[in-house]
Image 1 (cartoon, rainbow, N blue to C red):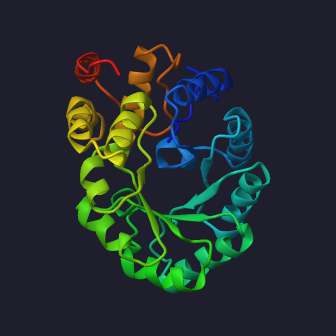
Image 2: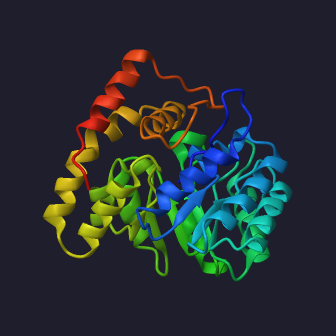
Length: 285
């Protein structure tokens, strides 16, 4: 999941965005994701989101890319989804609006509308109750799966992570990806996830864990996971903290020129020292 790079003054930095994309693609991932929660999508204007999705999809040079199109209204979600599909998105990811007045039936209609509008492009249902305060759950996704032919991808980010992934993996015809910054990678792979959408700060290492696991070298996968785990734990202490932490790690590697975030996360000087210590302790690829 790409972060959204900003200049020190708060504007979007396309120069850093292109450098970030090159950095991620050098790790040869199976795909890229953008404009999700860690991409600060909710802190971007609608026009910025549409422009960014187009810029990203042009820059990834054909690598399959999932574009987050979550929004507070169905009409706005459909606008983002249409722009992403028009520009060549491999899939559209939608989390539920974080509004308590949306009951299950309204949420269901919301997803049905998106599924129909983007056909035949796949719809990825993101269930992130810890971040949004709205939980869909396996029952909702199973019900949706029966009537929404394109909604066969899921990214559950509830806790406990492995149990949540396992429950959704049992839904027929559903392909599940892990999230949570890659923090629970091995557990969710064992629970049935076919892949991971982690952060973009150490892509070579995330790819290395996945490649080792899915080629059958589970001990190597666990070893590589253990090497990056202290950094992941230090980063993922709340979503807003995670966003800034990822940007600081990317700055240290010369990828970003600023760790500016529109989300309200902050990392203290001591916290930054810890992050960089954990980063430097990771063995090379």
